[in-house]
Amino acid sequence: METMRFNLESGQVESTAGKAETMILSMGPQHPSTHGVLRVVLELDGETVIKASPDIGYLHTGMEKLSETKTYAQVLPITDRTDYLAPMSNNLGYIMAVEKLCGLQNEIPLRAQYVRVIMVELNRIASHLVWLGTHAMDIGAMTVFLYCFREREQILNFFEAACGGRLTTSYFRVGGLPSEIPPDLVPRIQKFIKEFPGRVDEYETLLTKNPIWLRRTQGVGTISAQNAVAIGLSGPSLRATGVDYDIRKKEPYCGYEKFEFRVPTRTEGDVYARYLCRVEELRQSQKIVQQALDGLPGGPIRADCPKYVLPDRNKMKTEMETLIHHYKIITEGIHPPVGEVYHAIEAPKGELGYYLVSDGGPKPLRMHIRGPSFVNLQALATMCEGRLVADVVAVIGSLDIVLGEIDR
Amino acid sequence: MNLLREVVDASVALVKGYGMTLRHVFRPAITENYPDVLPKFEERYRGIHELQRDENGLEKCVACFLCSAACPANAIYIEAAENTEKERFSQAERYAKVYNIDYGRCIFCGFCVEACPTDAITHGHKFEFAIYDTKDLIYTKDMLLVPDSRKEKGRKASDQAA
Ligand code: SF4
Ligand code: SF4
Image (tube, rainbow over all chains, first blue to last red):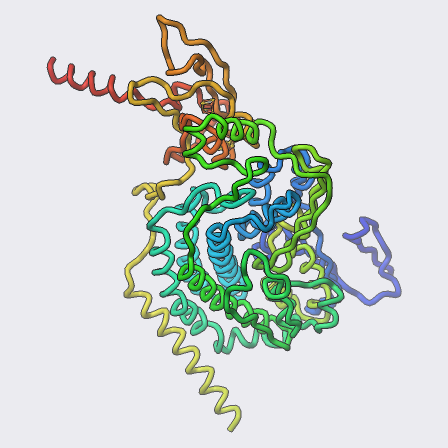
C-alpha cells in the first residue's frame, strides 16, 4: 500500500513508495538540549540518523541591519547580545574593527590592552564553563553544571565590578576603556585565578575518566581535519581534529604575542577530543590572566585622539576645549574615513570577525558578523549522520553553539 | 585481564567522582536567598537610574540632552525650561522640566551616565521591575530624582523638635 509522508523541509506531501521507510523527527526548537532555539530536522531509520539538517532563524533580531541605524558607539550594546556567553569577546572584536577603520590600532595604551586581555580571557573561561556545565548535563552529569556555574558567577561579579554589567557588558570603547578598573579588582581576580586550576581538577575528576562519559563521547561525532577545514570550522572544534590554528598565535592582536601559552590540539576529532581541548584551554586562559595581572602596566587607559576617542572625564569637567570634544563625539558620533575593514579575533567559540564598511558618516554603512557558532553548526550534519539519536545531543553540546549569534 | 583492568579503572574513576561530590556536601553553601535576602551588588552595578542633586540641594541636570543623544535605545525624553529668579531648580540657566526614562526600552548600557557632563544621572542599585502595565515602566522625574537630603534633614530636625 502506498503511504504518504509530510516532508518537513519542503513542506510537501510526498509518497514514500519505493523508498526505505524512514521517519522525520523534529528536534527543537523547544528541546532543552538544543541549546536555545535550534531546530534539527532528523531523518531516522529506527534509531539511526540518516540525515540531520539544522533549521535556524527562530531568534533572528536583525542585529546587522539594526547596526546601520546606530552610531559606531551605539552599536556596541548590540554586539553583547550576539554571543551572549562571551560579551567581552564580541565587544573586543567590534571595537578593534572600528579602531582599525579609524587607523587607531597602534595607539591603544598598553594598560588598556592588558585589561582587555584579562577580561577576554576571563570571558573565555566563563564561556567554556557554561559549555562544560550544559554539555555534561545534556549527557546526564548534573553535578558538573552546578560546580561550573559557581565559578562562572565569580567571573560575572568581576565583570560587574569593572563595568556594571554582568551579561551585557558593553565594556570596551574605541581607543581603550571607559573607566579605570576598581583598585580592589586585581587582588580579587588574583585570588580566583590561584584557586582556579584546583577547580578544573574537580571537573576533571568527575568527567575525564568517568566510564559513562567516555562511552558517550569517545568516537562520537567524528570529523576529519580535511572536512573540518572545508566546512570552515574554527576554535576548539577545529583544533580537536589536529589543525593547529589559533588567531591569538597566528595573527596576534592586543599584545597576545607577549604571553606564554599553549594551544591544545588533539587528533581524534570526536566529542571527547573537543572536551579535552576546551578543558585544557581553561587552564591556558588561567595562565594568560595570571601573566597579564602580574605584568599589568600603569599609564593611561585611553588613546589621546580627540577626533575619535572620548576625552578623559576629569579633564572634560575642567577644560572648555575638552568639553567641546566630549560634546561633539556624543552628539555627532565619530566619522571614520571611507573604507572597509575586517578584523577577526579568537573568541571562545572560534574565529569571530567583524566586517565594517564606512561611507564617512557617523553610522556604519554595513556591518557583518562572522560568527563562529554559525559556521561551526554546519558540521552538525557530517558529525551526526550514521549515529544514534542520543548522539545528536552529545554532538550539539560539543559544538558549543549560541543561537543568539547564529540567528543574529 | 584487560576486562578486569577496565572494570577496576572505571570503578576507581567513579568512586573518585563520588568522593568529590561527597566532599562538597561539607563545604559551605553559596546559595543566595533572593528574594528573602536582597543580593549585594558591586559599586558600579547598572540598575535603575537616579538623578542627583548638588550640595545645595539643586538638581545637577542642566538639560543639555547629551544623555538622550548617547542613548542607543531612545529611552530618555527631556523637556527643558529656563530657571527664573523666583524658581530655581538647577545651577545653570536651564533645567529639565520633564525627564522620563522608558524602562520598556532602556537596556542599561550606561552610555547616558558616561555622556552626562555634570554627573547628574547615575545608576542606582534598584532592579526590580515587575508590573502589570507597560505604561508603568515610564519613570518620570519625580521617581528618578533623589530626595533633597537637606530638606530631609531639616524635616527630621523639625520632627524631633515637635
Ligand atoms: S542606560 Fe543606556 S539605554 Fe538606558 S537610558 Fe541610559 S543610555 Fe539609554
Ligand atoms: S542628565 Fe546630564 S546629560 Fe542628561 S540632560 Fe541632564 S545634564 Fe545633560
